[in-house]
Image 1 (cartoon, rainbow, N blue to C red):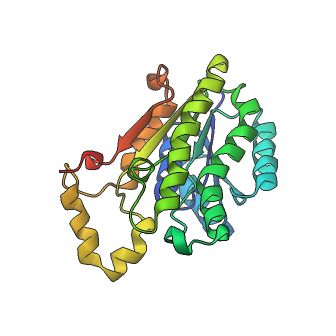
Image 2 (cartoon, helix red, strand yellow):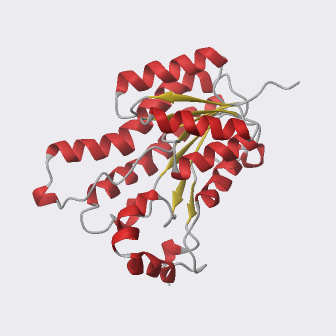
Length: 252
């Protein structure tokens, strides 16, 4: 029997992250779900186990350097390798215009979206070197190109950083056969948009009109692309960012 591959997915207790964990589990990976909600993590592991997926939960805050390093090292040592690291954790963190932006807010958003990728990737590299067709998959955003909407400027800045660190890691790790790519989800129907969906449902629904394929994305749409990037079918892809937005990035 072939040894199971191991995938770590940060921010995986809901939304896109959980869909990715489920898909990689279906692909035959042992999946390690990270998050900060231990109760949700335990529930998600139960749900995956009910589908025959081998999963475990590892709770830590991706913005905390020591916690990230300790936990990813522990996972790597337990399994002897890491095959895929999916740096899914991230978020808007709120909205703030620059004139009113506190340093604390600036540092939090940068830590959540960019520091987390650095901390997790650095810790995983020694174990990815022992993996089978190893790769890192990051998440950027259209905001990394268009700088985001009002109040989302620092989110856009952090995601532009993710785009560049993806390419930099790819250069750095190519000699070890470790591929590094990113996905750039468009508007995906998750709790990320929960506030506007509940307060302005007509605005939320109208977003589909700006998407070529005429609908909002589903978490599974992103999970399928992550599955591809992690697979042998993507063996000659590295330093790439794939737009998963139904043509939204081009506008219509």
